[in-house]
Image 1: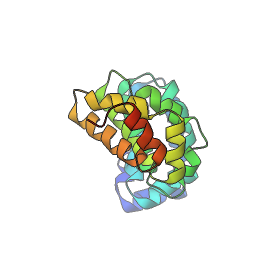
Image 2: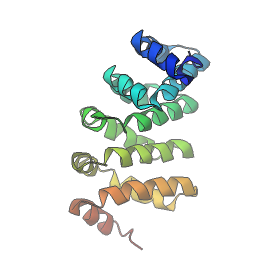
Image 3: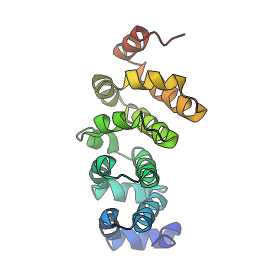
Length: 186
């Protein structure tokens, strides 16, 4: 399936034969490599607008939000966050995902011991806060304090993702006030 999603014809066949849902069932496989392959397959598909929209339409975002809590393997959690970040660029993905507990779950990953998980959690918050409703809900969910703490992270990629998310949230007055009150402007 991994190779099939790397070609245009393969992606069309993959989607038209409803293999997205079948692949998503592998997210629960006890073998880490099988779960890894399932996520990589959908990541390959999501890199193309056609595939991205098909994955969103298959309600996989809701499954990914649940996997943010259920998955314990860091390498698989990274793939989940990468797939979510790709999907958040699709039409109607943000309004849909805001009807899940995604913000709370992403906030918990902002303090992960794995730098890549911290970075991707911040990137996902930045993508969610692209529209006004996403900004408001992200601010209300108290994402700004942990993002501000990430400005002191030892990994520059983590700091960069935190700044990107904070820049988006600072477009609303409430976001500016929170960042200012945390004394992080210096």
